[in-house]
Length: 338
Image 1 (cartoon, rainbow, N blue to C red):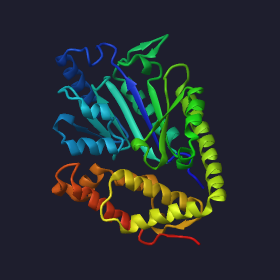
Image 2: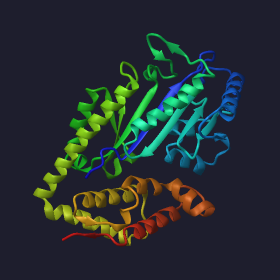
Image 3: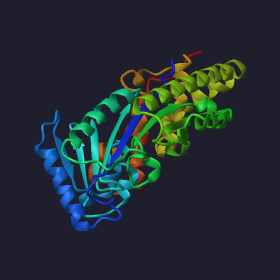
Image 4: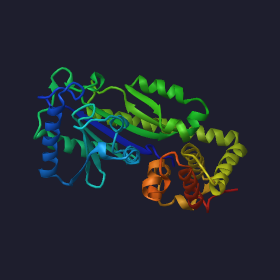
């Protein structure tokens, strides 16, 4: 059975009404606002504690690790500025970017179909912040943001789908057009490796948050049903080629001595298709999802969680070597079913 959503993410943007947007506000005013926000986070009655980090004190690897975990957006990681801060909620259930493109950006990310639970969490955090701060809001345009296209609800939801058969057969373009007609957009994840794509609401006006999430879930289910049908067609028409593709992926995973991230994602994707079609037995994948494994194989994850300071930089060949080692261990017992 193909999972509808392999991962879910939501960001929620707000701005303080008494301050200009960060890119036009005075540095001292932003620093004062940051301190006010941090006082609320560390002194309020929250269900979980907030851990505050200064992004300008984090290394390149640490910043990339936060991005890979879905706790920091790439744009926030790339931007400098002394008035910024990153606050992590609990054990990483959510995070808050302070004085990035906007004064507040709540971020949450989870493997699996978690859009509704993520929205409930961010909505609670947002309500608690609003007790202490007056948000910039216009009756006509909704919540005001530094990017006018994000005004309205200020919410952007992301659903990650695994659709390699649609990519292989060229049917993804039609799917993208259908999504645009429903106010959604589609973009490749990780440069399209493994047939992974992200569906997101392309605008934040005209549709309530719950309605946008419900629509995204419905359309995701429809896309996955199409993916399931195309997989069955490919198997029926090209049985030997499909089994050969899966078998080669298992062989590479079991014997390669160096492997870049994109190649690892492609191999895991092929093996996962084989597992879902009943063409492969993969004992090593019984305790985690394919997407969770892919996430752990990202460069900063390997450096922080496995190699520490040994690798030196995100371009170190040792990362590719260790990734291949992890793949060999994970797929050691995998085989194609005859």
